[in-house]
Image (tube, rainbow, N blue to C red):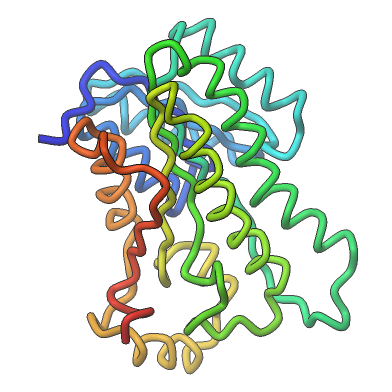
Length: 253
């Protein structure tokens, strides 16, 4: 079950953290995976090496997902190398705290440009490679997409971007169904990565989060990778327009 053999996938922001976990999970199930990165070339190449050791094809491709020209160039490379794309995982994103009254237009625009516009740009180009034979698109959102249960103070830009991701997912699921393209979102809870450690470095704050998680542990990139492997498999062909919360029961608690 959940075989992705012969499938070609692109994971944005695949050089570390959740993106890396998704890349390795897809490769484990047999997919060939292109690893997008913005500035972390060495880390991306290390992930590529891991995928190749698993027996799958892989290459790193640089692109700022908020730049239309760079996104188009990235997909042109994928088309040149593989001639097709079966799976897109829109994972690239940023997060940082900023009190709303002090938030600058630049901070707001940068967050939405990367977290939301980047997913729009990548999905638009992916559709061109998927529309004849179908495909799977996963947009990474967050439990913070609505701010519920997350403690969303000082991340209005992030919450807005991730809420937009879910709205985009639902809209695309309806519009692209005629092409047999499934569009779903994964909303991670607190996943232990470099980004979350930098964002929430206070141990007491982390302990406060942990107390709200019924499973009493933080998530791992592998947890998100496993969810992505399922949603991109043939077994999930009748699932589209949904949000899969991978949060250890956080929102239910």
